[in-house]
Image (cartoon, rainbow, N blue to C red; front, side, top):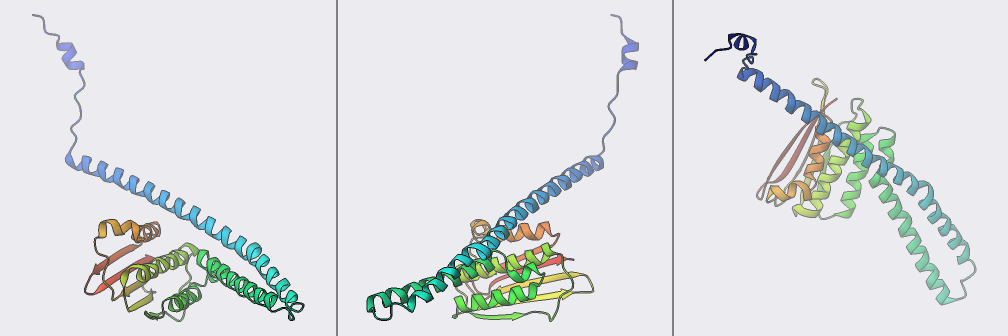
Length: 249
């Protein structure tokens, strides 16, 4: 049997791969996947916010305008029906309905995209939101602590903090059975981070697996991820739920 030594010499010996190289490669792949996921989340959030903003604009300039016009014409009509009790009753009802629709349109508009946020005033937007929730749920005691002023924030950070607060308060009203909720916003200037805490004394979130999606925790986490922040969630049936968000700026 003839042995082909030349063939053995020409064969390529695969390089030795260390475990460190494998770990570094996997780490880099995971980092790339995380970056892609964050970009997709940000793109989705931007698309949703664009729709909300456009609809809020249309609601303000078109629908609310038409409702105001109807209200004015109804007022003019009222001068001519004072002698007819049934017509006066219909007129009064129409006035009530039109007034209620105008108020509801304004609430929806602010809910979609608060006017204060368009000018970059997060504090004003939050104060108005707290007042709205206090009116909706007078049985819940709302306590909030806000700084007198904030460091300049990028618009996406202000919007993100507002949406997280909005979602957290919605959860309190719908699920917590709480009698008290506190909201605290802290501007840590020294480390350039802003921290939001929303805490209630309710019954907790129960089983966290389904609640991550159904209670908006997933969307809050997504917003924090796209802003490079940290999201903390603690909940039990005796002490209630606390959500803490820390975002760099």
